[in-house]
Length: 79
View 1 (tube, rainbow, N blue to C red):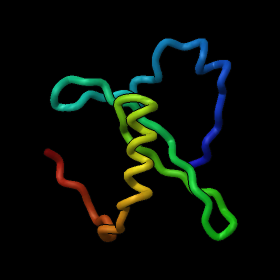
View 2 (tube, rainbow, N blue to C red):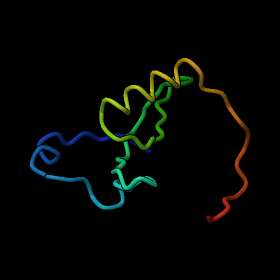
View 3 (cartoon, rainbow, N blue to C red):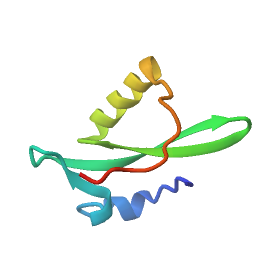
């Protein structure tokens, strides 16, 4: 994933595309945020769902404090 920032386009739009917005079990909107980090001279990226920019920043801070690797993923159970 490469992170590209198009400030003018973002500022001219009311909401992100539908694929970047979901709702939680309480029907509150969650938005998809890009995270980027450097490792071995390369840039890598992942994403996180959060309620707002502030919430996304708080989630990153929590990751810095307590993130651990749980293991390799092999599949997903639909619920």
